[in-house]
Amino acid sequence: MLFSPSFLCLLRGAPRLLHCAAMSTVTGTFQLEHALNYRDGARTEPADGDHMEETYEPATGRVIGKFRFSGEKEVDLAVQSAQAAFKIWSQKSGMERSTILLEAARIIRERRAEIATMETINNGKSITEALVDIDVSWQSLQYYAGLAGSMAGQHVQLSQGSFGYTRREPLGVCVGIGAWNYPFQIACWKSAPALACGNAMVFKPSPFTPVSVLLLAEIYNEAGVPKGLFNVVQGGAATGQFLIQHPKVAKISFTGSVPTGSKIMEMAAKGVKPVTLELGGKSPLIIFSDCVFTNAVKGALMANFLSQGEVCCNGTRVFVQREILDAFTNEVVKETQNIKIGDPLLEDTRMGALINRPHLEKVLSFVKQAKDQGAQVLCGGDPYVPEDPMLAGGFYMTPCVLGNCKDSMTCVKEEIFGPVMSILPFDTEEEVLERANNTRFGLAAGVFTRDIQRAHRVVAGLQAGMCFINNYNISPVELPFGGYKMSGFGRENGEAAIEYYSQLKTVCVEMGNVESVF
Image 1 (cartoon, rainbow, N blue to C red):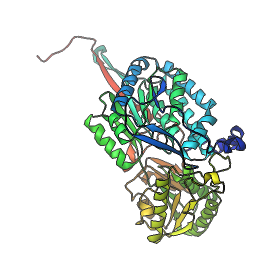
Image 2: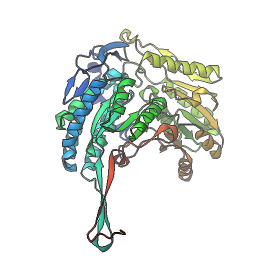
Image 3: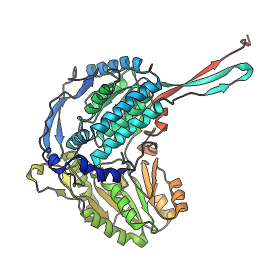
Image 4: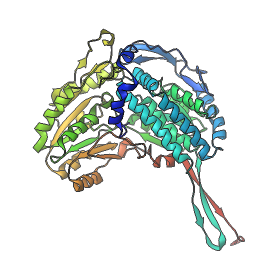
């Protein structure tokens, strides 16, 4: 997931919306009190399920509540409810759907501070980033509201007055399965095009971040969707399997890891159900010596340290042309050491806590392995304990820059999903393009250069679905987002997403007599 181009403008506006004193008193106080499933327009406890899960506040390490995973009966009830709502929603005109989506966008915009605070509490990212995530979310709803009324088929004139036409129709009940790094935003990215096309959706968030998507369900209900159109079921792998294999589910959209995506694809194939997979990445960021130096440094930081590095499209393989390697590395290290870590609800914090302790330990183990394999830790890569004792149990680490990296190292080949940047030198364009593509992933890539011909030439050769020239990790909702190779297929955002949440029906109309060979 990515930032919108208006990030800097929103960043400047954030302090006016949530004041430091108010935010700092929130950390460590939230306690979950309400049910986390949502069905038929209301929060509800699941009808079945025998596993209880704890959910955490990453900033403090504190358990903020427990919830039950949904069983097969609850999944069936949620799908049946969505199917009933779909029959109503699919009969509405595009303009009617547009009006309701615009109202939902308005409510999100109005409640952005509240939603962002909840996102930060359950995810650990800085409030500054969370506010931008919420703005991207309402922009997504607003964008697809604009498309809802313009979906149309094609008229084709045939001979002798006969003709044909196409109808773009909804699929039915779609399943959205979200990731924990952008919980609210991912739910909007999946539900906005689905609902605009006339579908219903049952959404399963990550069990690590079950809280904020309930706010979206309530907002849709307040905006006026039929009850049951957007339901939420909580759970893990078994719950996901019940959803995917349900006979009335028409499509699955998943954001997450490659191994899980492969399993989902396999299960969906048994029912011949279309899937959209937005999976992992190990993306290259190429810095040529003729770049605008300060922009390239900023781009490398944006490509690696947003959301504590827990971003699938991060450009963690930073290839730097040898002529500027030392200067670039020194500046990146200096800027990385200045990143303020701490209470994510304080407006001047720029890096919050990782999602949980096992993940923190996994990221730290990657740093240790990199050292063992010969990489040089230029800064960071250690556990971090903020001065505030309330945060002592949180899941923090210092952002890390690795030098002396080789393409064969694990830190260069595998997705770390944490604040770890690997810097690699290169000499020629041909060399770096070959090395950049030498990965099983293909989600994103970036290039910094003043040579516009080179920029387009390199981007044309990069095997990645989302490419950036002289910037990184921005994502206007108008542009499609998705990967090549093992980073998945299908697209979210842009007009392209409409094709993945609808189906085309062809109608052939004969205006004369039937000619038969019999």
